[in-house]
Length: 278
Image (cartoon, rainbow, N blue to C red; front, side, top):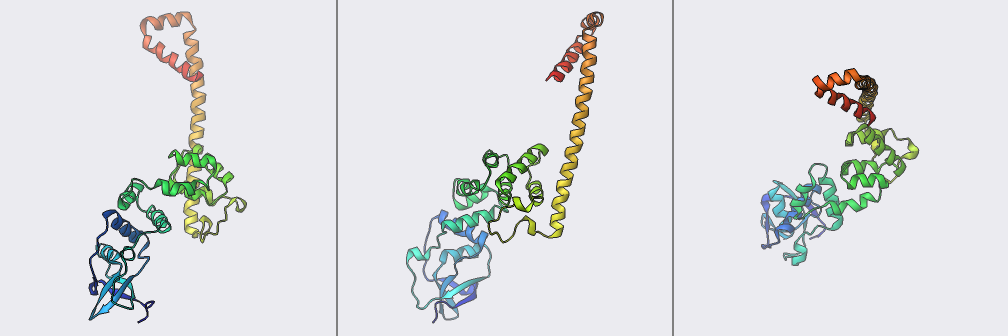
């Protein structure tokens, strides 16, 4: 019988050759891996009557049952004997774990993933590689929690000087969302884009998606222009009010009258002058 022969077998026809126990943490790693990336390594089975006994992959089998999978990919073994204990447990390699965590972050928060893996945290497992691709200012903003991991990952599509420009724009507009970052990245000239052999980049998105991102950018620019004009008008009005308040308080007769009858108004007028100076 060819050990390389693969086939999909209904879960109802599979049964462990023998029971093996692993730690809860190890099982949770296997379960989280399958949730995030699917079954990387098929089960190894041997036909017995109408069923198949599991020679390798009992914990993967348990995880598939818990996830409600009905059919499992399997490889037929050459003889009916279990593999060694180490082989029986499907341990997650560091590379697989990193890929699993990155994929899971698209839908889950870091705390949930860490709990599923039985870890105290996962940030240290992903942060170093990401920070190396970022401009120092952007890396600092990410490390301080000013921008999210998703936003930082989007930044890696452009060269560090452009990353700094985008961060400056985000600070100016007070918009640190991933959507806004994507819109700014989409408008990046070809010469400032980063080429890392990715299959897809922001510039490969559908026309509709590009349109949505550019619309987001246009809305942010309009909002920024509106508040800029509003702030300028406020500044002008404050200066005019400060001049008027100073003229009242420097008039001895008016100041004496206000001090006697309206001391609260004097305090407020002094506050207006102080605000204008500040």
